[in-house]
Image 1 (tube, rainbow, N blue to C red):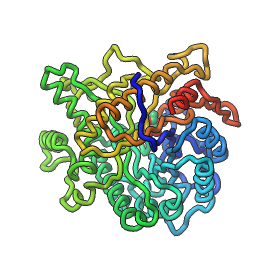
Image 2 (image 1 turned 30 degrees about the vertical axis):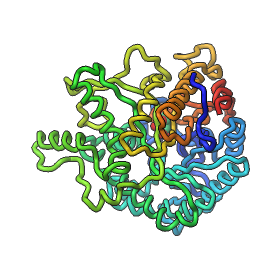
Image 3 (image 1 turned 45 degrees about the vertical axis):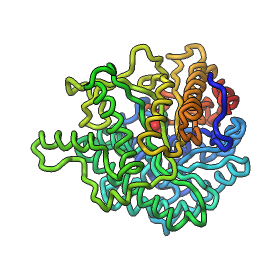
Length: 471
Ligand code: GCO
């Protein structure tokens, strides 16, 4: 363990997302979102569940605030449900009950000295916007801006930290490439890339609208949250492996980070490779839409901080056969996998590699001009049959305690020893919740939630005390 401290004003918090915790999916005038539709589709979710009630935060938000207070969190990251606020996506017809809910919630946090960090969009697009083409239509950009404008006007007097869009690359890859998240579209060759463009434009227009219309009065910070694994060459002395690792980072983190934090455009490696693949298919142009000079200028520099979600690390080598592709998008020439010596958390994809966080923080700092970084998500899941067979609530979550302590130790090294400008850390997640396609089979919470119990009783795990002690 290294000794020392983060900044005095370091943000300590936990993170959640509306569809994963709120429930009340059709209550008090809320409109339907693409996740309501998707989770209600037969076979879409591993355990056949949905977020209809989930943690029931819509009714139990005061308990959530108490839990945050007990953790000694200074901040809380949560997302707004667009369809709860604007059921018809028309800002002249808001849902008063939805507005009242978030007002009560924000006021409750502030009364307890917890500052809100609000994500505008954590994947739950109103179904009515989807019906008009959703992220695949240019019209979404205006719709998103209208929604964001509404949120700034309603909540911006009290919310000083905004995230426009959460993890665009996962949405593009899972929602539009592989079709394993809402809206469940399987079009890896085209939709996946079209959507990355409309997301970039929605983010950029919103950032600029905040800057011109609200910044002077409200004085907040706004950015996007990107997720990234760290990735290393399997054999660092093999140039093909080195190239594959870099390509993986370019095509996941760089896909959105280069345009926003660097030069307005996608990484060269990605543009060149996708053009080559498109030509091999007999196409004249790249399937990756070209950003015009005007669009590049619009997108470039639209950030006040770098929001980073990070969980795990991978090794890379070059793909030798098509079936090896880890299909975030189809044009990935890198084959990535965990080192067999790494400890697995949860069910499948999450391996505990704390040093990867330090390396990634340094990479971001060097590649993107030393931005202020906020870790907007980091955490791990447990599955009782895997970790603590006798402890069905997994209250003695030693593995999560180790995860949090070791990752934060590496983050502190990045800050103190390497000079990375790290401003905050949000643990994923406050309490067990609806883990997207995995339903309730995978639990990330500092608090256990009993989903069999109508009261949705929350019980702190050992890791809640560990996290509080570190704070
Ligand atoms: C994501 C989301 C969260 C997840 C978390 C664990 O990264 O997918 O931001 O909503 O629940 O990452 O998978």
